[in-house]
Length: 133
Image (cartoon, rainbow, N blue to C red; front, side, top):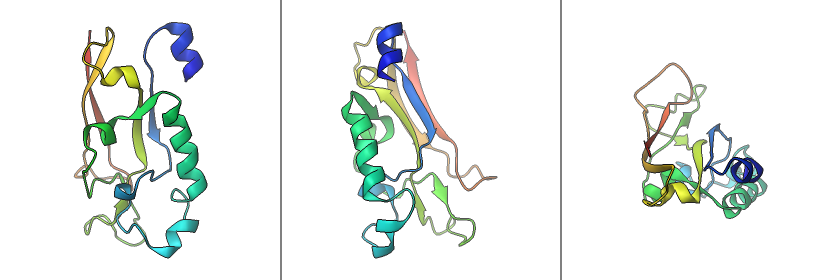
């Protein structure tokens, strides 16, 4: 991402199902002992994602909604977890930090949110509202 951003001179967005529940608020049952070994919740995965962010990028949703609880993008269909909202936030918009600044000359992130009511998958769509300049 850094190479593309540098070469093209514009901010970048990395998005999709990144398969990591990065923060405590991104897991419905934070603290459960089995999470330490569960895919998407391991310490190695969280640390790897943190390194990506430390390289000059930001989790748009968490930057805009740092204390939001119960905001998930994935629910196990096997355990019928969607209706009781026992989920994980695994889908992200990871943006150049500059996109969070109002004076960015290319684009500014205005909001990011989930559409949990849209069904048809074990994930829900996520939205990034951007003001293009």
